[in-house]
Amino acid sequence: MNPDLPPAIFLSDRPEKYRRLLLAWFDKNKRQLPWRHHRTLYGTWISEMMLQQTTVKVVVPYWEKFLTAFPDVKALAAADLEEVLSLWSGLGYYRRARQLHEAARIVVTQLDGELPCQIEGWLALPGIGPYAGGAVASIGLGRRVPALDANARRVFSRWLVGDPHDLAHLKPTHLDQVATLLVDEDRPGDWNEAVMELGALVCRATGPGCSVCPVRSLCKANLAGTVDLVPPAKTAAKSLGVHLGLLVVQWKDQVLLLPPGTGPVAVPTDSPPPVRADISGIHGGLWGLPSTPWLPGPAKGDIGWPGHIWRPWLTAIPNLEYTSVGGDPVLLGSFRHAITRYRLVVMVYGLGLADTLPHMDELLVAPSKTQSGGGEFAETSAAGTKSMGAHFLGIPSPKHPISNLVAKSLRLAADSSV
Ligand code: SF4
Image (cartoon, rainbow, N blue to C red; front, side, top):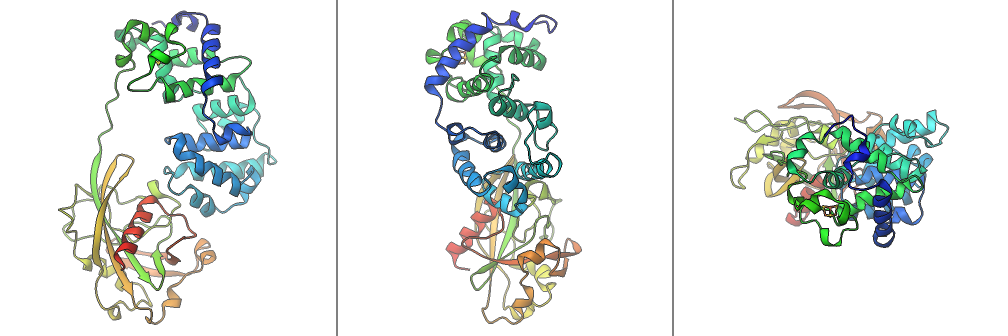
């Protein structure tokens, strides 16, 4: 393939034919999704941010709740980040939520609350790359620009390449050119959605439904019988086994959570170097449980470490008077959990504090104080000396955003009656 040739030459037929066949199929077969019922630019933006790295099925209830809580960009900009993250809890990739919130504030403070009406304006906002910019501009604004996600790349590769040997010559620029050429002039958003819908429902990565595909007569991989070889199967990113301990400290009907950005607070003796001591990149903006670092390999059975690994940290909390607590945390159980490429074995420890423990009120930190940095206590841990806030939150519906990992740990602790 020669990138200097006009992109149309790589297609089996005229662009109009692809458009006619695929749009007719899309009109009949597209999924009924809430953001398609009543299309708005804002709703399209939110859906595109949520859909990155996540399936449609998972996103639908999140999108509905999010739009109810923040019906427009002004409501989103006015919200606390914690409220936004709370509604995002469970969707993962929390950086997207923070960028969404930051972008909303930019729109309100710098653009008079008006969402951009050109792709360039979208591309200037946090969290918007070429794919999301193309999707929002075409679907939400009717601009004639492509939106190339993983599904669309796979579909176009199969349309263009019959001989797997040609894959070495298929450059990203080819796909960009062909994608740009193919966008329908009258229905650019529908076209982009149709390509992605075909990739999600029919032209799947494995086991594509070529016999029912509307463009099978134009698809070079199908005509050559090489669909299984185009594009080549990706080598899966190597997963990494890690283990860690989390501590659930319970007092009355509340549980101790630590503010976003808090690092590990306990380090088992003789530990190998941690795989990841700073997990704020993964769980940034979320409240967490006291934690060990992420250590390499699976834990030895489910035995875990002795409960006294938490003692230096607990002892350093003023007002807790740990010596009067009456015992170290105990291992309640363990579970497995996956985050990005990490395969975690999580050991959950529990410590129940007596209702009558004195001075607990002085440990409680009002949410408003934690946000402004007040209500902190000096903490000396095995990981070093620093200052950090802590907060007891009701277990059933914590106000502050927590990750699935923490939610699972709390469920395990609740089932174990700490
Ligand atoms: S014919 Fe098969 S490989 Fe080609 S676009 Fe359709 S589903 Fe994909």
